[in-house]
Length: 231
Image 1 (cartoon, rainbow, N blue to C red):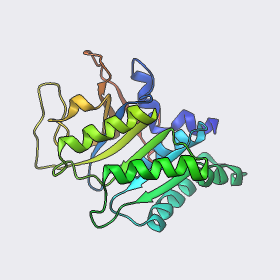
Image 2: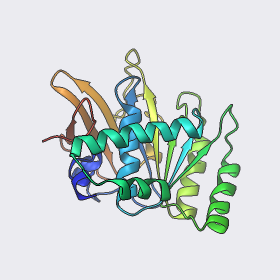
Image 3: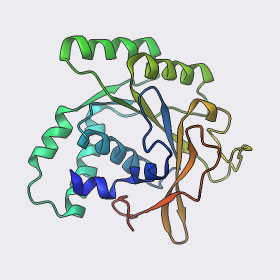
Image 4: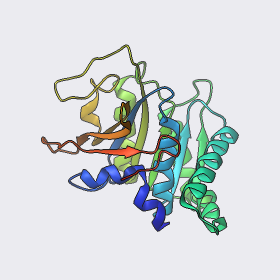
């Protein structure tokens, strides 16, 4: 979907030295509650799907039906925002190239995820290019869990995106400019972006770009209704 590529929030990666996250790497979106984290995260998922990639959405908080409902709402908003008249093929593409795995009531385990990925490949001919993990509590998650995800990314040759919930009242930032709750584990992530409201709009900012030690004022302004990139 060429029109979507031009307004995808992942335009922020045009500022990246590698222009992408890439297989074997972890990326994270940091945002406060109510800012639009879910919408932006699903736009990341749609961006990858519309590029012909296969995606597994891992939910630790919501049932699959509710996750599908989120996708349907965001997708409908996208179709309306782009003024698309014929879109059924794109909806089929989303359904065909996305699998939702839900681990509710603290049932998530890395070994269980590995087994599920293996089963998808062997029994459904579905080998994901991307994992999108929503619902991990970065305040309570041990570093070893994130290291386990990095091992999965490397072993399966996939990229993994996370969402991290920040708080207005916690202003901790490390010496590299990475805010809480990722300030102590930022070395595990290749791309770190932040969704942040400002007086002039809602912006997506690139905070970490792979091994680059110099990051320009890289940000993309998003429409506060659709969360699509605007000029």
